[in-house]
Image (tube, rainbow, N blue to C red; front, side, top):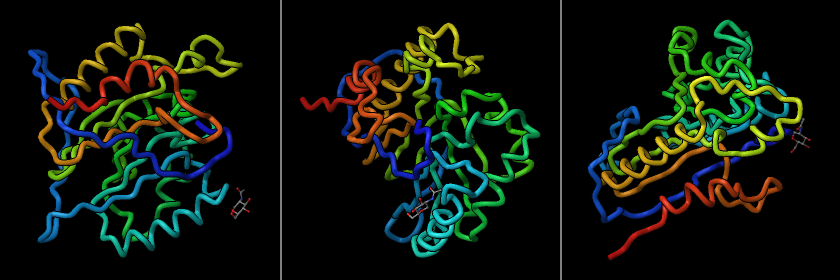
Length: 242
Ligand SMILES: *[C@@H]1O[C@H](CO)[C@@H](O)[C@H](O)[C@H]1NC(C)=O
């Protein structure tokens, strides 16, 4: 969400099993990544706010990711969005895809599956282009969905599309145009998403439940908290212990 690029880790929440039950079912798409190694361990890197065609130190960060990725023997990489600055991708043919992704993350250790969500800057372009499976023909590592679940045995990851929660993008867009196709009507979109996330969290038996999204719920950074998420998402993530 930063205007200036910065690279940081976002692991928003780790919490325990919900104890109540529900009759609804989760509609979020699911992916599987088996843990590996004798100890069933899992290694991954998380990066966000990156697509700068190598500038803003993106290449230097990529180099270090490659080195640590080699040591860790990564299972996969997570991207928390703002994948392409300033305005997402213009279409599936936008050279920014290769210039900011394929040609930047070249280390051998990073040739793993990437799991990505959208950031607010991605919504300023052709949002559906980033979600289009055709991009996998250009770079097979790419996988970007609005919201989905990744089951990695000891950990289950819940990827959440957080941009539609933020009021200011709708009320005071400040000259930016957002591509909300697939998100409107907004209230329905958010309500369905929250219901699906709640159900999926409750049904998960993974030891670790990790929620990933572009906007921090709570943050000491200059953007601060995201009040819409504090109000709407955080209660769903609260630990229930009976
Ligand atoms: C790149 O990183 C260096 C060292 O942290 C910093 O001084 C410089 O401002 C960064 N460049 C950009 C364009 O962000």
